[in-house]
Amino acid sequence: MHLVTAEEMRRLDCITIDRLGIPAVALMENAGRAIAEEIIAFCNRRGKAGMAGAPRQGGGAAHSSAPLDASAWAAGSAHGEPAARSGARGVAFAAGATLRSGGPGGGPASPPKLTISGDAALMADHAESEHWLVLVGKGNNGGDGLVAARHLREAGIAVSLLYAVPPESLTGEAALQRDAAAAMGLPAAVHGGGSPVFAGYSGILDALLGTGAAGAPRGVYAELIAAANASGKPIVSADIPSGLNADTGETHEPCIQASLTVCLAFLKRGLLQYPGAGAAGRVVVRSIGIPAGLAREEGLSAYWLTPDVLEGVLGVDVRRRRAPDGHKGTYGHVLVAAGSLRMSGAGLLAARASLRAGCGLATWAVPGKLLPLLVGAAPELMLAGAGGEADGTWNAAAAEEVLKLAGQRDVLAIGPGIGRFEDDKAWLKAIWEGSECPLVVDADALNILAECDYGSWRQRKAPVILTPHPGEMARLAGVQTKKVQRDRIGLALSFARERGVTLVLKGAHTVIASPDGRVFVNTTGHPGMATGGAGDCLTGIIAGLLAQGLDGAQAAAFGVYLHGLAGEKAALLRDDPASVIASDIIEAL
Ligand SMILES: NC(=O)C1=CN([C@@H]2O[C@H](COP(=O)(O)OP(=O)(O)OC[C@H]3O[C@@H](n4cnc5c(N)ncnc54)[C@H](O)[C@@H]3O)[C@@H](O)[C@H]2O)[C@@H](O)CC1
Ligand SMILES: Nc1ncnc2c1ncn2[C@@H]1O[C@H](COP(=O)(O)OP(=O)(O)O)[C@@H](O)[C@H]1O
Ligand SMILES: [K+]
Image (cartoon, rainbow, N blue to C red; front, side):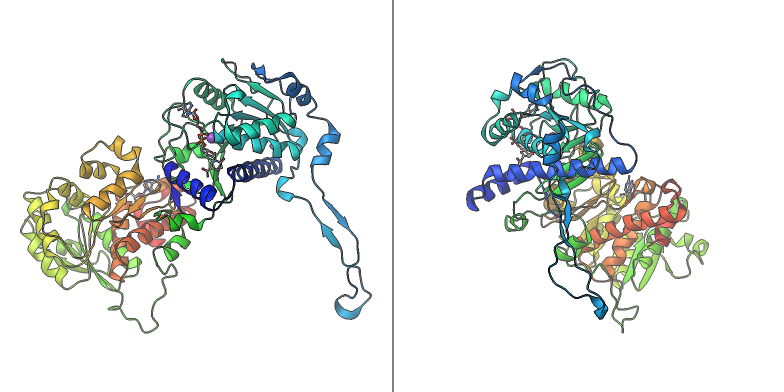
């Protein structure tokens, strides 16, 4: 599934309207209807869970706002009018008309039933216990909310509108929807400042700000957002939670904290990155008539990482089929140069994970002094001494040993548990320039890299994959960690492009960016994976996949995806995500 920025969304929108001739108002109609359907599904789920919304109290005048006009309020007082609502529920009956005779087994024919059903998506199970307040902004997001309000009303759900600004200031399609809502007699009020009262409502539809928002919500918008959050009512957001930066996932102060976000047409980048992903609640993406293929035609290259994307965009065989006549040489040989006296476990985890990822052979290279201590640590691994100091630490001269070993292997992974040592920059430069196989760089090797002018180093032919967590990324990019987290997708993309590397920016919803400008956001995994050594496992997994012939982007993306899945499986086995440790992730691969 494609991920879009607000600007890209506007472009796709324009193409649909201008080139395909689909009217903007039709898109808005589809959007609003989709939102209404999702609200109804939300209400039905809530009803089934035995937590039906608070019963309505006293019609629509439960907030301290001025009514739009008297007729709208008058009509609104008729919310509960049974005739108007039952007619709106659509048809749902079974007719016994016989279409054809005959039945199975040749027995007496029972007349087949002709079943005619109504618009199931717009049927609320307990409409009478629902009353939704729609917060309407000035732009098209507000227009979507107005359409949704009409459809909710048609489904028999009481709806009231609360405009953030005088409705006269709405323009274009949103103004059309304003008039339609008024003509339908939906009760409406204009926010008059202060704190609206939400007590009578069972839910709030946030249609204040969408992709046209700029900066933090101002004035009445900020007031309404803060009050809605404080109300404790479930909030459904139209397109994005108001107050969210649709591109980066940054949440402004204030930002709607939604239970559900009905995202329209294409998934907005900001909904997949924290803290925005946390503010959005459950996200449903609904098509509204903009052809999905437009994103590809327009060359958009940001994706939510799913098995479909792994296969269709990246060309990965997610079933990991092996040739019937394959042998260990077929699946490649990984060299992991990692671990030192005090952190040997990091190397062990990475090397074991590479085997579990399916490579044919793995060699673990450590400072020679450690070798005797590690014999038998994992019987499947080959061990190699790579020089180093008498106390089991690495030194610059060890690079030569690593290069010798790498020359006979398919992939080299470096960094986990190596620590910092004298002339470590020379060590890294020698390996970077001298190795001809794909290179995975992690942990302290990244910290070393951050201190090097590696742009001036000899160009490598084989791919480089960097796997920083946000702290390491901050050092690599020369910015503060806060800045890394503010726009993870944007930073990963520009870094990968500029530096010609595949970048794996780890953390919740890891971002994978390739030097050709593609970017993928992974959502497998969970916070239980925030445990020492989990990243070392990922390094090994990516190396193991590279050894099997996947290219840099394929191995990085598939590796991150599998790593998260394994973390999820490990949590299930443990019955508690918090108990997962790195070895569990390897065992769950
Ligand atoms: N394909 C599309 O792009 C479609 C978009 N639709 C909806 O339209 C939305 C985008 O509509 P618009 O571009 O009209 O923008 P918005 O509806 O997000 O609102 C922008 C308006 O809000 C005000 N505003 C902006 N930033 C503000 C701030 N920080 N504080 C207070 N007020 C602020 C400005 O007056 C501006 O005109 C989407 O999110 C979606 O909900 C749908 O109608 C269907 C089609
Ligand atoms: N909240 C989270 N949700 C999903 N994955 C997470 C979360 N926190 C950490 N992870 C994953 O766990 C791994 C931790 O790696 P890292 O920070 O390098 O740890 P270490 O250096 O101890 O191995 C990364 O792959 C990261 O994406
Ligand atoms: K919104």
